Image 1 (cartoon, rainbow, N blue to C red):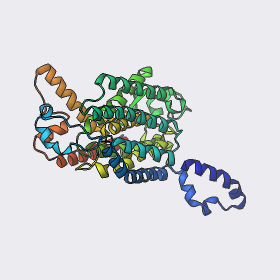
Image 2: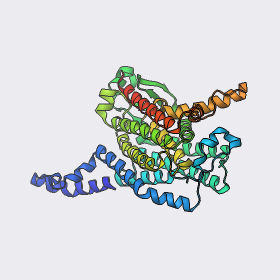
Image 3: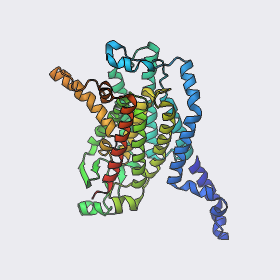
Length: 404
């Protein structure tokens, strides 16, 4: 909406400004700010934060009135953990609707919603959030911690991710990275000069200033794995008050910076030597809207939580982050920037694998945040220490952009 306002006023005043040598920016300078991604990204963050604060209490009251309380696993299922989390019984879930709503409203106001990068991330977030909503609704309706079956949930996750991956792979504006005026015969030297086009199927990592491998059409299943994996990883992290929300904020901030840098030719190709696409800078506006919504939701989700995001929020956030990593061509960097999410998912994989193969458990309980709870850490200690780790990993991931 705001970009459209800028385009309208620019077209209306440019002719007169050229004639009078008195630019419209002198009389309507605030409108001129709308052309800058940095301003609109900051504004998107602020708008989504305000929307979350304004509608948060209403959403919470509505969820309580509908008796949409989070089902808590029984002592027979989780033993001592049930005692630690007993006070959470009845806390409303499905609060992720607040995050998704704030992000989408802010994106419509501050971003160019038909930008292909913004559109694919927003649609993937909405679709994954809808799947999570169905899962949450089934849990609260049946008063059980089991929602949609794992097989059905995985099927729909793969379907959503496959649509997003095909869009990214075949959409011309998205699939073109780097300058297109030089031959690939220049090899690594040409890539370092930012003059060799990069295919969407080529996988990059900042430590190596040239593509690692070209997956060609195999990039589609690779992208699907990233989106599904990230969605489930965020979902597993969402087990303590504010844990997933805080880690989302740090990871999203890092990718907002990456998207902005990747959208600027000089910064991307001449200075950092990372994949560049002139359309991807707009994605920073969408991601900053997610940051603002995360801060707003954390206002109500910090310990002791008044509302949980549920699968509605965690699946949607994970889908958006995974898609953003693909759009910026920094898929592998997600392992570092989203290191807490990876750690949580790996703890579950290792725990299940160890028990099936050795009949022994590695951790007291998985995901790993519950392991530390059972070791005697207070819930706040686990949350804040994981936040600190997430901040350090995000900063380290950004630092890697300019190693070589």
